[in-house]
Image 1: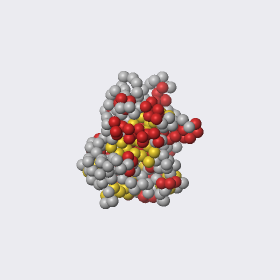
Image 2: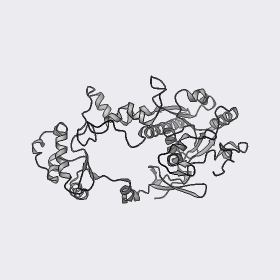
Image 3: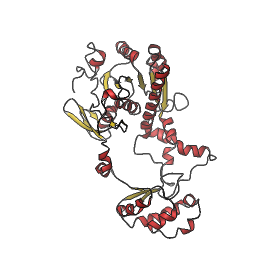
Image 4: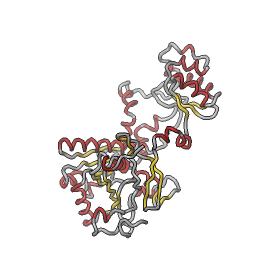
Amino acid sequence: MRDLPQADRPLNGLTVIDFSQFLSGPVCTLKLADLGARVIKVERPEIGDLCRYLYLSDTDIDGDNTLFHAINRNKESITADLRNEEDRQRLFDLLKTADVMIQNFRPGVIERQGFGYEDVRKINPGIVYGSISGYGEDGPWKDLPGQDLLAQARSGLLWLTGSRDDPPMPMGLAVADMMAGNALAQGVLAALVGRGITGKGAKVETSLFEAMIDFQFEVLTTHLNDGNRPPERSGFNGAHAYLGAPYGVYETADGYLALAMTPSLKTLAELLGVEGLDHFYKDKNALLSHRDEIKQSIARRLKLKKTAEWLAVLQPADIWCSEVLDWQDMLRSEAYRMLDLEQTIRRNASLELTAVRSPIRINAATLKSEIAAPVLGQHNAAVFGADKTKDGDGKSAGQSK
């Protein structure tokens, strides 16, 4: 696949000043950067974004962890002390001509620093101001830590996931941060379109908690219109609280098979050679009311053959199913390779890393960029001018660590 040139990307020419740190805000600005925006990341002198040191593994790449490299590629870094009047003025000068500002401090913090929406709007009425909090700007939870696992816990997602007798089960990803970052990017893009129509800027807000509620909108809509009855999770192979058999993941002779939809229980039972389910065929509610019993019968049969053998039987019959792949098998798959999902990013002329590209393609072109996450304060001189020649570590701006 070809890569879309920077000049042809839809946000080329727009400038984003990014005050955010950790994950949710930087996910938003990463999406904007991939779409062509210039993202200038504001970091504290000497310390920088604490995400630089939040290690997912013991892998250190040029002084930063892999998480920081993943979510801050394709951005620039400047350092500024929000308590220093000279630095504050430099930031205000940047914001006067910026298109977007992003922040994810706890409610009230950025306002106390003088960079709240009302402060910024006074100097730039057309700015689109994006904000992510943990639980909104008001209410009893507003001052609590806006952290991913805690937002999953308070949203009901941990309780919902898994089988009936399982303990609360978190997802294997920072899903609240990811969803909130993507939601804010969506809101910012909509506000930019609106500004193009009306000429007016906007304040766009979301929170980790709101993102988690939206993530569950499908099942919550059912719950809110079903007498507020709690869903009855499957006691066996739970995968979706509101879906009946055979929906779930089953062990085979050599791995696992995910089973989703089937034309009918009769069709599936005959294909698998499962006996003893015929009394359920005419009961339209049986797949839910007798979910566990049906799943257990299917599970016993699926253990007798290998995954590939079952796929050869089920897929031609339009049974929606899939092998369960680990990362190694997924990365080796032809489907992964054909989509050209990896990109090489470079820092300091000698450092190369492999990263995953944006999932978006425009006019059949991918949104790859070889620009890696910046060194702390790397772009001070380029952004502020020659008068600001030192970064947070005392090195000349742009100098490699």
